[in-house]
Structure formats: structure tokens, C-alpha cells
Image (cartoon, rainbow, N blue to C red; front, side, top):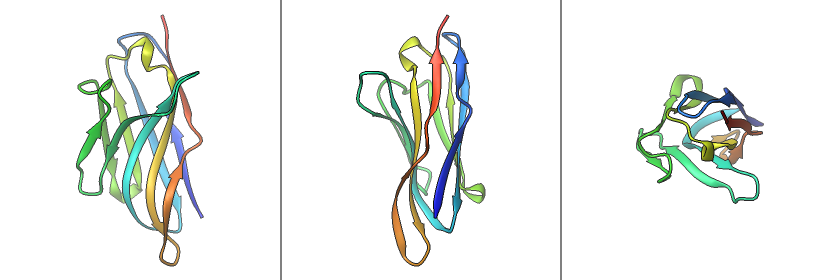
Length: 120
């Protein structure tokens, strides 16, 4: 099957930076969109950023100008560079990918989530 494994979360002070990574593995034929979502306690999961296979990106309004999404096709990996972090960026960050795999199968997959905590 297919797995998404995230890494790079942690504790950072306001104004600091973190870089998240998410690697897809398994019987992957191709990957369409990849992206990051986040969920803070008591809130709904929200879009952080997505990137298409052609490199077109989309960002949530709250992170525009501070976060940058990128991907490395050869390694089926997506990254999220987070700069100028704010207290309100604290959340569990989830990787998402739309993947074609196996014999003409396709679907959305999610990582297990990685905690990002912004605190002084």
C-alpha cells in the first residue's frame, strides 16, 4: 500500500522557523497534488498549502508570505518551510497526497501528523 511519513515538527519560539518533510512510499505510480493541513485544539482542520504536480501552489490566507511549500518529485517528498512562526501556528500538521498506485488505483492519503508548537 501507500504510506506518508512526516518529520520535522517540534517546539520553536515566536519568530522562529521550522521545516516539515513528508515522504510517500509504497507501490506508487504517480502523485498528483501534495499538501499540508493543520488542526489546532478545538478547531477544524484547515488548509495550509498545496502544490500540484506541475508546481502550482496554493496557500491558506493565514500563512501567505511566511510559509513555502515545495516538492522533490524524484523522492516523492513534499516540504513545508515555515518562517516567522506565530503562536497561532501551533497545531498538528498533516501531510496529504493524491496518489495513483498499484493497478490503476488512486486515492487521498494522510500522514500521521506532526506537532508544531510555537511558544515563548
